[in-house]
Length: 155
Image 1: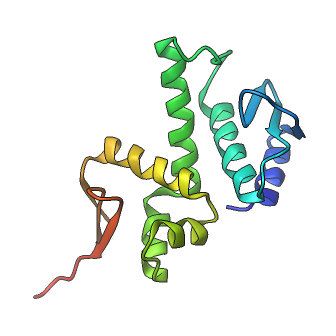
Image 2: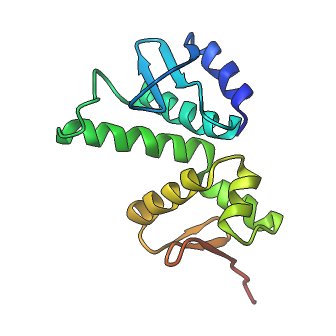
């Protein structure tokens, strides 16, 4: 996931993205304006934050800053899952496996996301799919992190 490509995608949606000094959050969306905390260290961090804010654009409504409200927490989780599915997804996990990635760091690097973003995605996928899922001709296990195996059919 590339920050510049996400900026272009945001622009195509009519969203204005600005880097600003934010205190409480790494990113924020209000209407068609997205603010990304300007002092994030890497473009990968900015891309992950922007992906989540795009998730809010596509899935949330209203002000959900008060996370003590159950509905707001649900909208937050829905936006994050949207970002994980769009920018990692089960297909991304398979591509990383096929590329030879063997650790969280290697997989995150290959997918262009932070390790935290990937770890959170894996945790969400465990909740969504359970301990394992068949995807195409692969089995993906979420027991201890993520493991992938290709199904081999013998006839």
